[in-house]
Image 1 (cartoon, rainbow, N blue to C red):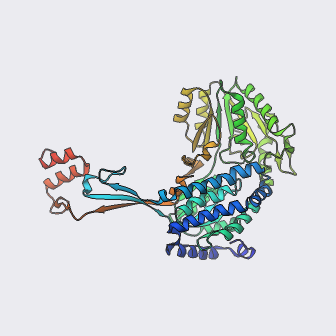
Image 2 (image 1 turned 90 degrees about the vertical axis):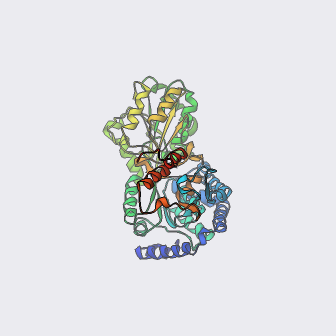
Image 3 (image 1 turned 90 degrees about the horizontal axis):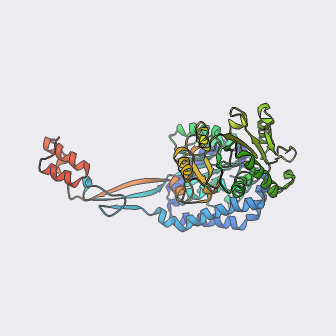
Length: 496
């Protein structure tokens, strides 16, 4: 759906027609084929390998993203997802067998003799709505799971990253199966037209405001959703740590990930009053090593995506009760949409910068008397997508894991859990619902169908009328599945 003509006329009627085409392709069984799934994943891999230079260029056009970030955090991570899926897909699609007494998922005495299995089947036709901050990775990573699970799909890239959106439409059209995989470009009109349709699942990455719109649209058709949202991801910094290493990892997660424009970017730091000066000095020193004395001239971090977001971030900095709290940075270049790495100390908790996800290069530091007090601050807000702790204290680490609710936790680093395919990546509460990555992506786009196989042997009269007290007694012990209870019931020792 990448041509100019199609984009101009894409409305509810066009969206409905598109879904019908894709559903016809799904119903004929094409996407369920193992060979189709593998061929599409291999085509995607080929697409990346042959067009890496164009992908890097598009990301530079949209975000001034450094080649290092584009190559590692978008292209390489997607390549890893595809490679893993190709390696594991045979195992993923294989039914989980359940044979009486000899398997993990056991059948019971109640259904004896029987066996069962759990079959992963594709949901059908799914919609994937992507985000602008990692417009290549966050568009195609969910597609990997949807294809591996055997679905037909529509991908709607973000219009805020137009160069990447256009390139995705072009490349997917060239390399992927047009009868089952489509890209629809556009903005609110096109997204609204898509949301009016009945899907078998909607996967949305973005903010909570639009997430609510997606969920409301899905509710009309009882469509399940997977929402990857965000939130204010905190970093708790304890004393007695390797501060230089800790600060470098915080910088890498904050400014080294799209200049703070990432859903799991550190949003604010909490440390003790005594430790804050040392932390700030180390942050200053390491930031200068990474980005120089004039960071606005550095080519090693991304620009703010557009003028609207630049204005939004400027408003956060210019609030009266915040503007005097800057202890490092604050420089701005409106023409080039650049804001220097900025650190603020003890901003008021009721300020704008602490009431919404920052999604930019600003990093407030809050101070507490005792580091344990940080848990109350975190839990007083909405649940974040990620939370980070730097400590050598085993007890504090255990308290953090037990008491802080977030989509994911990392101890002594930031953002790296995103790269571990054996960990689910997803939110909780207002930071999202559902999870993906690795097999979790396959599961996200699959239905786990329970299948029970029974023999004609072992048909028990106790199930059928006329009902008696004896039958009731025996049925009660059969339902428990306990051999001892069944023996007692047969002997008449159990009470009704």
